[in-house]
Every structure is written in structure tokens, then in C-alpha cells.
Length: 376
Image (cartoon, rainbow, N blue to C red; front, side, top):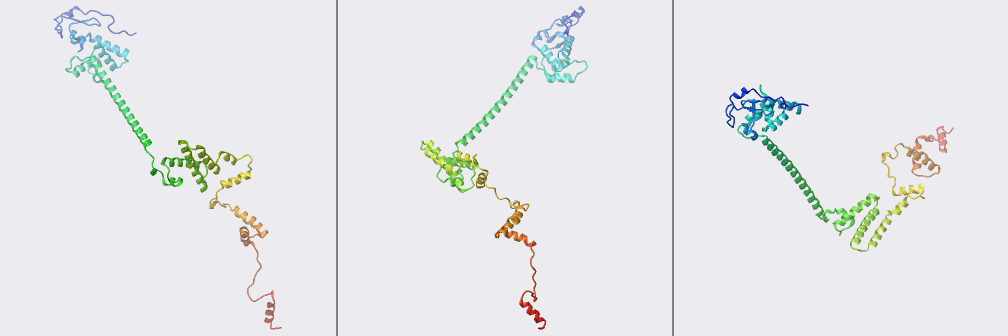
């Protein structure tokens, strides 16, 4: 284990040192006074040059000097730096300032380490610069460093608290604004001007705005769930919405709910969308033919686009040469038979016909022939 310097091997300096002239110091010590280092025990005839100065009140009665000689203090600094702080001089200087009750300035410490002068150690350079930087500020000690750190910490806490308060106020302001907006939307009363004319025409005039809104919502749900391709279907859905509104009114006014509900159920049955009716649409006894018939009646296949009606010509081929031929055989005159004759025309052979005065088929022809021969 490392041993701190000054822990052993202490001795006395030669007695002749006590006869040298002494620095009077703050107390006005008489000549011949010697000063013993509290670490190594060596006696010095003068404090100046042998001990570091300190403005701490703890050492005021010792002439304003640190009671450990410079060699012991430098050895202790070197030991602390290497064994405790791993060569970190900034942290070592901070520790020495706390130990010697010196005012600690991070800027002064950095300058002392960067701009080291010949013959000065980091500690002696720092104390020298500290005396210049503090100037006439007397009685500065490590207590002032603690007070400055507390002030800085207090300022930081105040800044954090202020930022948190500002953020909280902003959050509350945003929440109040959102609450006011929602409250305004809730308090805003719906008017008839907000209802489109189309909705008024669909359900008729004389209803309240909220009633129009309710019926329109129900109508959109009905046409979304069921087909509405005809006028009668549209009317049925409209009357169902009116019936639903009557049920709500009857419930609110303690009216005849059963009568209103029956009217609604009758409309549902008329529209063929009752649950049992929907179940019967595809029953277990339905044949494939009846299903096709129902599908063709309710949702027939739409007419194809013109360019896809007979893209490969197979429809025309079958209509002409199959249906057209059958129609011709049975002497049925229709579009198919006409298309068949038209298609057959390029392949049909007709008897020849002659234009002129020669006729081999009738008497007139023979007379003309005899006349040509002069009655021979």
C-alpha cells in the first residue's frame, strides 16, 4: 500500500537555522523565531519561500501561511495525483484547494496546467496565478468555492424549474384551448341551414335538424347494407327511417311504441330484408336452377362492353351457321336466317342469264330464227 509522504522519518533541522533572520509575518514574530512543518517536523527560519500562502482564516494566526512546507506539500500533491486521481491534475488541484482551504477556480487551474513556467510545479503555478487573479479580494477560501457552486446549482435548479413551469403552463394552455374547442362544438346548436336541401326533400319538411341528421344516418346505413337500385327500394328505406324516428319519439314521450315498431316491421317485410327472409334466400331446398333464376332477377350479369361482346367471333359463328341454318331448314324467317343467307351468298351458284335478241326457250325465238332465214 502506498504511504503518504511525511508519515515517518521526521527529524529536526540543524540548530543553526534558528539563528538566521526571520520573516516577521503578520504577527510580528521576533527575530530568531523558527517555524516547524507539521508534516516532516523540519524547522524553517522563515515562512516566506518555504510555505505556501493562504488567505484562509484557519491560518491567519500562523502569518497567513499553510503550516506544511512546500516540499512536503509538493510530495503530497504528487502522491495524490499518481495514486488517487490517476494523473488527473485538475482533480488533484481541486483536492489540494479543499485541503489547504484555497479558493478554487477552474479557469485558473486550466491556465496553470497549460501555461506552465520553468521552476513552477502545477500547485505552485496555480497559487501564484490565484494571487494575481483574485487581486485585492481578501479572505477568499474554499468556502467561497462552495458558495459559488451552491449558487450555480441553485441557478440551474431555478432554470430547470422555470423551464418545467413554462412547459407545464403551455401544456395546460393547450389543454384549455382544446377543451374550449370541444365545448364550443358541443354547445353549437345544429340549425336547419346546416341540413342540405336534398335531405329535406327526401324526408319532407317540418322536422328538427337533429331529426334530419338521425334519419340521414339511418338511410346511409340501409343503402350501404342492402341494394337500392329502384325507386320503390329508395321509398321503402326512406319510410323505414321515418318509422325508426317514430319509434324513438314514442320511447321518449311514453307513446305507443308497439304500434310504431309494428309499422317499422311491416316495412322491413315489404322490403324483403327481414332476417328470416334473408335466411330463406339461400335455403337447403333451393336447386341450382332456382338460385340462378333468383340471381338473374335480383343481380343480373351486366351487359359487357361493346368491344368484349364477341371478341373472338364465336357468337356470330354459332348464330349464323347453327341457329341460322336451323331457321332456314324449318323455314323460319328471323334475324338468324337472314344472317345465314347473307353469309351463304358468296358461296351460292346461280343459273346464267343472257341479254339480247336470242331466245332458245320460247316460240318467239323460233319465229325470229325463221325470219332470219327468209322463210326457207
